[in-house]
Image 1 (cartoon, protein in one colour):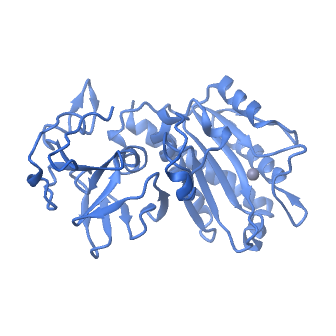
Image 2 (cartoon, rainbow, N blue to C red):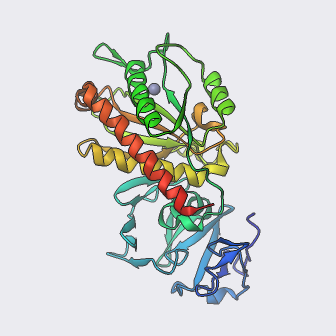
Image 3 (cartoon, helix red, strand yellow):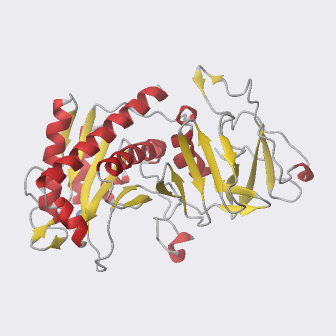
Length: 360
Ligand SMILES: [Zn+2]
């Protein structure tokens, strides 16, 4: 799938022909952002730093393809460089910005961690094609996604831990108690909206991770969500975060350099990588709206077993840090656990609207 490229004499630059007027059209009746439509061989000297918006420039680094931004974005995106080290892109009311730290970008203020760091070269900002297709395009231009994303009707909810596995424990409270409490509230709210809801555990019961994955596989849901609360030796760590499964060959977020060159190549739920991002962002933005004082730690990737082989978009939500006094105070109140469940339901509804709009 990655063969549509031309290595130039310099071995780095290639150019994709984009025809914004005719090219942003239809392929087999489905709107496709036309990256793979046509490859135009050009001499290396043409791949200059000043890039026309009608062209997508890409380059290769360590065997990985990178696309230049904003050239790779739809023509109705407008971009600005507030200073040479920053890039801001607007599309409608959405704003995407890239700062100095190559590990993430901000989408409407939410930190979204990349699988591979972006870099700058000759005034251009380059992101890996993998990140572009799995994290950037699904948010800024979801109509360009070609992968099928199921409209959520059946949802599997996974309450973290249970039975002999308490999870984190803080001030005499077990994580398993809060996860079950929020998940049963979620079930109630989702069921009343007509969703078919299946749980991987019922009540305070120990269910091995492999059995949870088996429940998901049997249920063949359209959406999966696992709920946890965090804990860390440093009591200052706080906030909520959302995880998806890393794309093939990518390390987990914060894996460090040792794992970076050595990430396991497993497919995971790769066919749903774009759906994972849309689901994670929809839920993240709704939790952020419901809890403006709860720190938003962003959307990250980790090889959690309950996400690995799921047949649908899947996320794991860490609701907050039990080891942090402020977060603990928030979620020790039942009304805030109800509010968290409500925010997640809003996120699922928002996700559903997005998927319906994509329309395939
Ligand atoms: Zn947990």
